[in-house]
Image 1 (tube, rainbow, N blue to C red):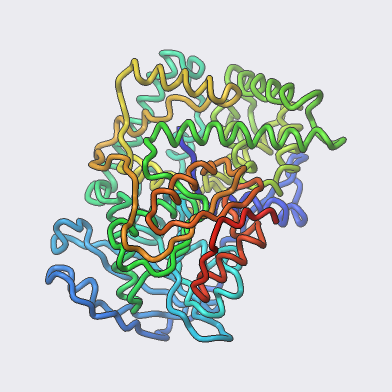
Image 2: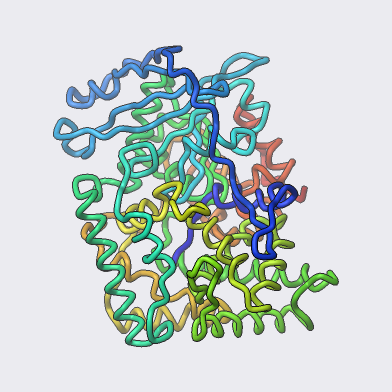
Length: 525
């Protein structure tokens, strides 16, 4: 199992704090929600891009020379669509659409070009991230001097998107309780059947696109967007999975690297299992940090030591696995949904108090609060609709970016290693690779170090207590890159630019003036 490496997940987790202040009460617990509505704008044309006109192969020239027609899409934003080759190895065969949104530089100060932003995932919408959460995506100083551009990568959201299931089918795929108990042969057979059906639906509904949503293809799209925006080099802020996209770009186009910041880094040398076990340990440690904090408060639903709390959470997961709790809407809270509900607020330490409320509710035999958290992670709205295709895109992209084993001996050893490394959540984290072992398209990529020889300085940000992208991955990537500079935040939570004033100052100075710290500042605030 791997989970989303996304600043979007942290953003929604952090909204617990703000939205619960104005929450409504449903079935005795607080309901939080994210306002995804915004002004649609007039749709009138407002600007055209001036592409760089650089020399590219003849079959790529129609793409690199295209003019983006920006239209008003409300709240000071401009929107446009770009076209890209479906298959970069055969550019003239077919095209896809990439959706962009831009917030023009507001001043004061000279315009420094475009700053492209990716929130992670994979499967996170950069379009929605920038348009709905601009101040969270980048600070005022960067908004003043850069055109901030969000984009949905191929396979995602408003771009040519992977489509698999109806809302009702997605509910069944994500929330149905499988028979036999997790890890039993009956459960494995049912999980394999569910995963096979999901893969077949994706293949049926997205067959042409499905084999071309890999990160290398997205990195080539990124270079195309750079050129159509009129920038001779790429300025880019990538969070979480967006760091993998950014490092892949740097490997492919080192001479086109402008100013790159990679916050919450993935290590490109990691296998899928490395990612899975790293995240399991990361969230296990984040849970211990939460419990250590929780036990200092009278409102904490746990007693004794942090280890006692971890044991209680393990018991709770086992309890709902064998006896799910029915929510008021009829769905059942099992171990998979409860683990998702636990993970979601662990992305951001400011949401820990609400994690305590959720645990108290589940310990009292109620499921609604936990279901709200699981729904938030899964992008499910209260009416049962899904706001995006992040689950489908997450799976489709990951299945092409990593190799997955079907060797039962290896699988059993990996599961044992997960449980040994993360005794509380490891038993519920295992067997997650089955979805990709039955996927219709396979990867040609193997994990390897990325040096990006000749690239301009690249800042890699790592947080010591990051559960989704462990700090060691940032250290690894910064060490591989020939021009990498590590910036450490000593703290908790996923990514650091929005939570550390020190990191923010370093990143802003780099983007605005090109200042690279002489050494790791080891930020503590």
